[in-house]
Image (cartoon, rainbow, N blue to C red; front, side, top):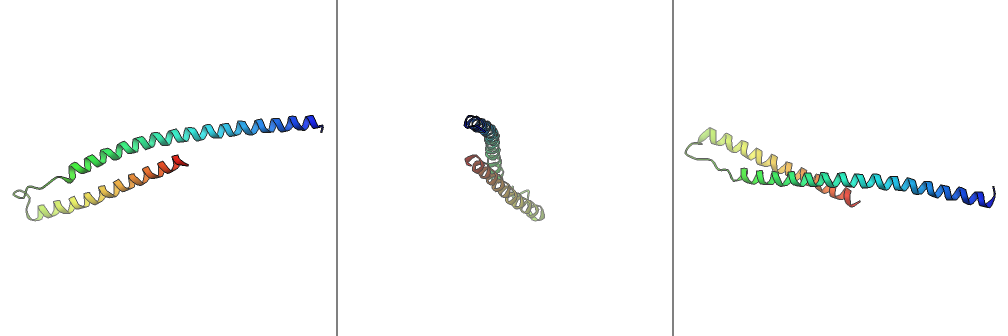
Length: 105
């Protein structure tokens, strides 16, 4: 193979690599765009859930109507609700942090 042929082969090889890298960059940019959109939607959902959580946490029972077993059942279910929503919020926050980390990479 002549020196000129070798150089042409190397040139074509470099162009092929550049094309491949451009495709990879394009794929990564699309992934980042999808992650940013998901992050925005997740953040919005988290905000809505926190607002709902806040409004429900401020509920109080009317002690003249809720007594005895009814009051105890309500309090048990309410405590379970608060634990569940706290766990759900933590899970959403963790998912949001994972997406943010993926975007940073």
